[in-house]
Amino acid sequence: MSNLTVEDVSKTYPGHSARDEAVKALDRVSFHVEDHEFCSVLGHSGCGKTTLLMMMAGFEQPSGGRILVDAKPIGKPTWQRSIVFQDYALFPWMTVQENISFGLEMKKIPPAGRLEIIQRNIQLVGLAGFEHRYPHQLSGGMKQRVSIARALAVDPKVLLMDEPFAALDAQNRALMQEEMGRILASSDIQQRKTMILVTHSIDEAVILSDRIVVLTRRPGRVKANVMVDLPRPRSEESPGFIALKRQIRDLIHDEFEIES
Amino acid sequence: MSTGATHDKRSPGLLAKLAGKIKNLGLIAVLLCVWQYVSMAVLDSTSRVLLPPPTAIFAAAWELLSSGELLRHLRDSLKRELVAFLWASMSIPIGIAMGWWRSVDQQLDPLMEMLRPIPPLAWIPLSILWFGIGDAQNQFIIFLGIFFPILLNTINGVKGIELNLIRAARCLGASEGNILWRIVVKAAMPQIVTGIRVGLGVGWMALVAAELVGANSGLGFLINDARTVLRTDFIIVGMATIGVVGLLIDQAIRELGRRLLPWSQVMAR
Image (cartoon, rainbow over all chains, first blue to last red; front, top):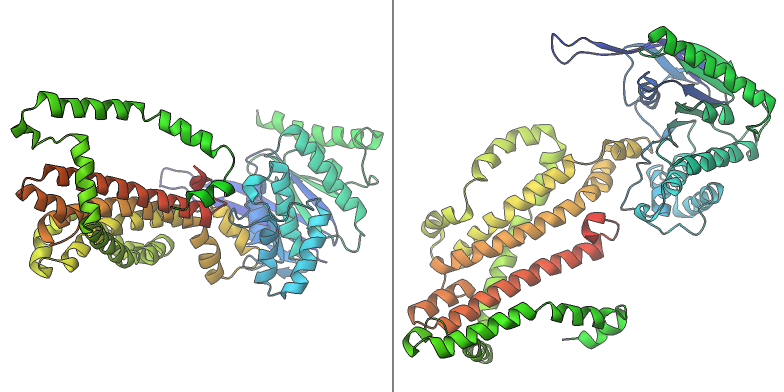
């Protein structure tokens, strides 16, 4: 189990030509995520939150500042920081089981051990009976379950999620958020992964998070760092839930008014 | 034909499907009848030599089949196509390398772009000087026809891979070698198969042309040889064989693609 620190991270994209101005996507973003914590990074589209996640994974380098896991600067992409992508990114030529198995093979886990881990994760995301289907035979929600199982199976230190439910229809999105909440609520706190979720949905952030980092519009800066200590599983009707939602909505609306 | 065995395995709708297909052949049946009529009743016996009726064509087909001549030519042509394909399949690793490593692409691309626009048929005179008349020359021309479609499709397949698939593999711990072999090559497979289909088609066309001028056997030779002795019926039988076999090769690759890549939406079409 691991903690993650974002320290003064900036990201500037150079312009393509001399006339083209450089684009500042993130501006000195800092926050800390504790062991076992579920942290949402919440912001409008274009605030650089996906860029931040890709830097946490190691696919992009910060222009300034650094990212640490367990107080050590991160390096290249590794299974220790696995990702759930918005477009699922399942390997279409592999069945559900083979997709989940891929990371385990890369970790050189022997076949017997692999099968046990695969079964456990398939149970966890509710995909029993679909082991031998190909991705194109699954609905969007089921694909995302496979993607989550695949990312969890390698036993990462930190699980990174890039708007995982954004591509789903409203009903499926609500269902997946609920399911994710169930997984979080049921698992022993000591077993739980440190998770970072990038989202633009306030509801999603409040249902799932222990901590919500609100980013400003471009360039993204930390607008607020809110702790959520509502009991799990969370009811969307509870007064605490509604109050928190309103508080965060106000934070984000402020942002609109400043910009426009 | 083992149609009896396959009937059992397929869905019960197959017979109905077949009946539907036969119904679609109505126009062709009518055209055959018109052809027969024109040839028998309109043309005089001299011009009938240039357009023999379908019945005469079928008789000629039977003659060529029973003497074994048609199969011998077909076998020679198919052998050339196959050997040329085996050589041309080196375009698959070359295409993968060009699609994946920029430096390889930068070196090879100008060369390929210079050679690619030259039609395989334009190589025939030079190839006859190099290889003489016969298998090697024919195979060289067919090779050129097959090589480039496979190469271009392979390059596109590799370059067109979704970035997130590679990222997903990387953050699941895949090494560079694993990413190339287990992700990139697999993801490019449907397009490689498409390239093989297109390539074999182009190769089949080039084959006939190569055999017309530079062979002593093969379907191209057969129809050209029949011309010199004014056997129009043999020419038409040869042409029909070329068409049917070309179609069968295409269908076979399609079917193979469907079987080997059951996950691919492209192949399912």
